[in-house]
Image (cartoon, rainbow, N blue to C red):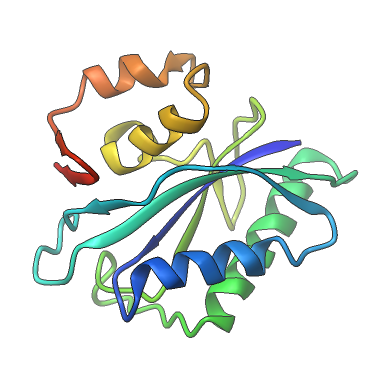
Length: 167
């Protein structure tokens, strides 16, 4: 199944962290990288007292024969392991704070589901230019909750200056 993941980092060498995450994700025998967007520098959301993020969306093929909800949880568990392996420490007191890597599943085919690990499509995808801009770059035909990516972007207040996303 085709899946779209959003990668983000703002600690250390953020672009290198994205590359390491991509490589780590693709070490899974059932995952194949199909496309990757450009890297965008993104103004922090919510908690502004931190470095800007490097963000990117990747498209993968996930060859999983499990029922959809189990497949989503299995993939999310693997991605959480990639995050932990890169040194991600979750700070519950600073939810939108700095991170070495953040990996979110944005879409899995046309699935709409909610498990204890993941909501698909991602709950805030339609509110985030740093997700929609790179998603539109690699998959301009994609819709989230029946809303074309371009239409969702048109509803947001944001500014794109070269590779910098202000929102």
